[in-house]
Image (cartoon, rainbow, N blue to C red):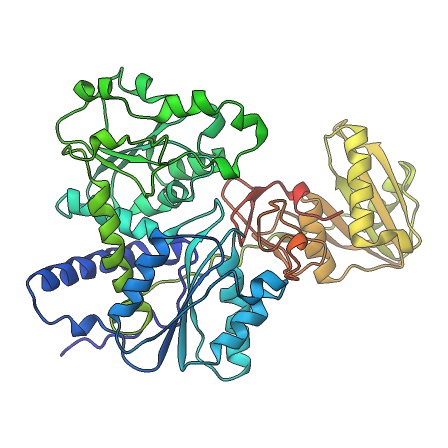
Length: 527
């Protein structure tokens, strides 16, 4: 019996490379390979074309030539699709109009819409995916797809697709191993940030990072690569890299993104360029099978890959750029329903982990009186929050108490607080709230403000319930949440009225759901 395939890519979005599973990415690369073979063999390629009333909107709010033109031509391959190209200089985005409202309105103009969006604000496509999907459901419309064509210094997932396809071509589509050197501005380069997860299509990965400390890849991305099982090595310049013998056969260069650098880094521009620019005298030190790649365009005066290399076998960047056309055709084919794939993809990041844990109440009356002797105002009914910032200094405990009071709005009710020593000699703080019982939502909020504390529920002078709370797997839904990244679409300065949302990683950091900036739990509150 023939297997029935589902339109699993309809209404899907590509906001970061991880939105496609490894199997789905490999499906895309295999379909791209098929399309190229059929095209150059002059065979029928209509199976890849989108059918029906589909609108493809190319919305580049940040200037672009290469990516924009690549998408325009890829969209025109789909002859039945309605292609609309936005001129950002004339659009509503320059009149301080809401992103969400604009895309909500556009969603109703076709039976089904695919939006290709490039913006300086990080996490924009993630916001649109969530908010416009809600709008579509409310109005009985098909949920549209959003494709991130680059957002600030966050990610560039469609560039990652064409890069990985190019690497596979070089390896004759063997994905068992890759050894790659990432060279250049690894701090601001969103194309290399996408490789942190994009390279997972290879079963074994070795990554050499070549950049001075000032523009080295952010620490959380390096740690993520290691947690993905990559072997990671760091070198501060090409010259030092070439002094050792284990040299990658794939080099991926990026330009210095001066427009995103602060004055402290710009002062070192000459030194930084020298460290990551290839020189003619380096040629004899390269293995024979090395290929250079670059997302293009290069800097016209100070290219990290000088133009004297254009005619050499090292040149892999020209075919790489052309592959952008083919991979983007296939991406649109998938999201437009022309290509079907039976996927078991599960994008649910959060889990049902218990982070509010009931603890045994050994002797409720004794516990209340014992605390009372240490300075807590005895209460007959209410809540005592205990073990606040246990083991920290008195100043930090005091500031944590103030933070809890401010965020939880405890200043408006009768209460008491203080600092004392626990039985093990460590300092801890407490807040007692007479006649106040915390709701489940309030306890959830408290767990993200000050994890590892204890909440005691007291009735008739006895502790009747005790909860030990940990940092939750996801923190969202509270007005006071704020991403510290000022380039994030959720940051209040951009006026999109987005509530902050954070997901805890394996290291205990809270990752912004929009721009993926890591935070300590103390950094997510706008106070």
